[in-house]
Amino acid sequence: MDIVKSKAFVYVCVTVWCGLSVIYMNKDSFKQPFVNISQSRLFTFLHRWPNTTNSDATSGPLYLKEETLRKGAKYNVSTFADANTSYIYLKQNATYHQGDLILVQIDLYDAQGTRKKTGGDFLRVWMEDPKTSTSVSGQVSDHNNGSYSAAIIAVWAGHGRIRAFIATRREEIVYYYKIYEQYTSLWPAYADFRKKGSNLTGQSTCSITVPGDETAGHWCNFTLENNGFPWYCLKPSNKQLACHMWTYSFSGLSFTFKLNSSEDSVTRWSSKDPQPDILQRFVDVSIATADTASTLPLNQVACNKLPPYITWQRKSPNGFFHQDKWHSLLCHDTLPRTIDAYRQCLKGRTLWLHGDSTSDQFKRSLHSILRFQSHANGHMPVTDTDWVYGFSVSFQPHEFPFYHGKSHYPRSSNQAQHIMLDRLPNTTKDIVVLYMYVHFTLVHPDVFRRHVRRLVPSAKNLLARASHVTLAVRGPHAFFRSSKGLLSYWGLHYADIWHQEFASLRDKIVYLDFWDLTTAKTHYDFHPLMKTVHEMVHHMMSLLCHRK
Image 1 (tube, rainbow, N blue to C red):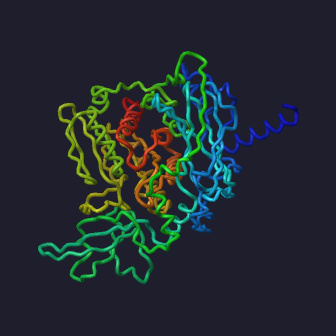
Image 2: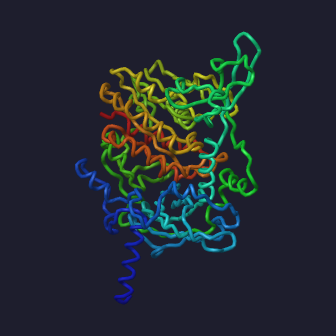
Image 3: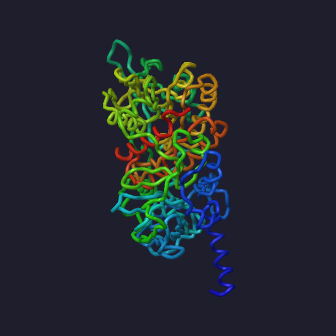
């Protein structure tokens, strides 16, 4: 390679690094072992890893800006990005060493084979070796011209296959944002009313907003009962039914508003089989090892001694799967995967798992591991206690907007998480995991921010008065597809909101980052497979148990 070509090559490499929004480091940096790192050096060491923070303007946003969403988009299925015609290819050679950074590029084309000229499509990239049940997520960057770059760490030796998935198209995101602004919510919510002592019943629709002052008198205001968050339901058409006769809540599982044929085709993408949206083309790489280890050595700092602020650093990848077990790159898991270890961790405490059905999955996982009886009943709040070993695990669905589905739940089922924080005594030794996500993907992101922001003063107050409490925030997880409108695309945006609103508490609260874990281990539904939930739960326990 002559001097001119060498300079051009260097320029392209630097540009790619900036575009990926990662902190530059040379390859030797990745080859350094994850052993014998003291806590005093840990912060500096972790800053050498790629960072998900999108700080460079040349790379484009990780998610679409609001001004872009407001402009709208044309809903022509023939011009959508197509996995059959799109390409993924290596930026370098196909042979690497363990610890190297692997760079790939994805160029999107539509079904007619025409190159896409705009960004905004949401891609996920991962590398896997099914033979050893090994996988790791890649960090994707949008170049705003139809091309995307991804960086992947070669964390194991052997074979790796790099796959890309068109998770959400630009047109979907823009259309759903339009619905947020026009209809407030993607799915309908309902209230049951019943007059006591009679068979008189009625139903009405509910919303986080009242659609116009002229109809304000026709709505029941349940904001106070929703712990200060807006919640309104239309007054029943039967005048004998009053607002205080609200008894149950339920919801639809899809859209109720009218769609034209183009809009309907857009909304179907979020619930169709994801397999056709995994690029047919893939990249195979060979990874050599510098020693006898099959994977990178792990960090020797115990997870329960990892400073909380490190868990908020958003280094990617923060771990990988090997033989179907999750291995954190941030810390060393010293918690045995045994019943006794979990019981000792929880003894004399309650583990609070507020949230939605994915929080209930955590609770069910713990019951299967700890082998004590569960009294769970859908979205009903429940606290189960193991009286022999002296601990409890509690689940309660968060406040509205909460979409219960076809089952009808009592009006008292939902409670804001800040209320639970405020009620804990000063002497508590409990473990509290704050979590909101899936149900909020059905409403405008500003609604999510409002609910997260309200948690901050209660969290600060609890930490100031209860010195033995352990507090954590569980971040969003990735999934392929689900019911109409449920897009994990919003997960990256919501992770940013958690980080922004809780910035003042990062040295006291642990952040449970499961995005890389659920990107490396792909899932169809927003409910991860239970074997993956077991890995999520164990990583959570390794970080939170015996933390001082």
